Image (cartoon, rainbow, N blue to C red; front, side):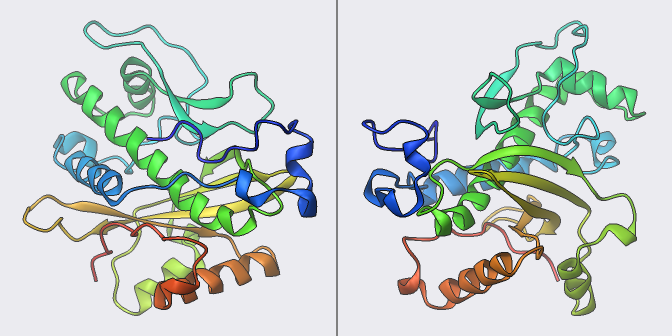
Length: 265
C-alpha cells in the first residue's frame, strides 16, 4: 500500500506545488491501486461481520467517538490489549504536526466502545480494529478517485475533519433515500468527511450498506458508497463524470478501481 497517494515533483517547494496552471501534472500522479489490494481489503472487511454478536449491535464500522474513525483521547490499556496506535496513510489537514491520521489502538478502541455502552470482546478487538482501519483506508481511496479529477489544481488533498451523521432515518442522504425507494436495503451508518483540496473544503458523504457475500463464500460484506456531497456545481459535475466513466472507461483519466461488493437489494 502506498504511503502517500499523491506526490509532487522533488524539485518543487510545497507552495509551488499548488500553482494551478503552473503545476506539472506528470510530476503529480496518483499511485495505482491494484485489484489485488482492493480484493484483499474487501475480504478483510467481510470478516468483520463474523467477529461477535455483541459487536453486531453497534453501528458498523464502530466509530469509537463522535468525531469519526480516529481517536484523540487516551486510556489505560486493559490487560492483554495492545495500546500501540497505527499511523494511517491518510494525509492530515487539520494543522496538526503529524503528517497522517492515526488509528486507535485496540485498547483505546475497546475503552471507547465500553464508554458508549457497548459490550465488545477483548479477544476480538485486534481483528475489529484491523477491519476498521482497512475500511477507512478504502474510503480514502474512493475519495482519491474523485480528487484525481482535480489533480491540476491540487496534488495533495488531505482529510481535514470528519463526523458521524447517522442517528435516525432523518440523517439518510438523498441518494440513500432514493436507493431505499427502488428496493435497496437501508444504509446502517453514514459518515461525512471534510477534505482540504489545497484551501478548498470539499464534503464527502460515506454511506455504509450491507453487501452481497463475496464470490465463493457465505461471508457478509459491506458496500461503501463514497461521493462528494452536492454542495457545489463542481461536485455535481464530478459525480456525473464518474458516472460516465463507469459506462465509458476509456474516458477516465486512468483506470478506476472497482467499487467492491454491491449493496443488497
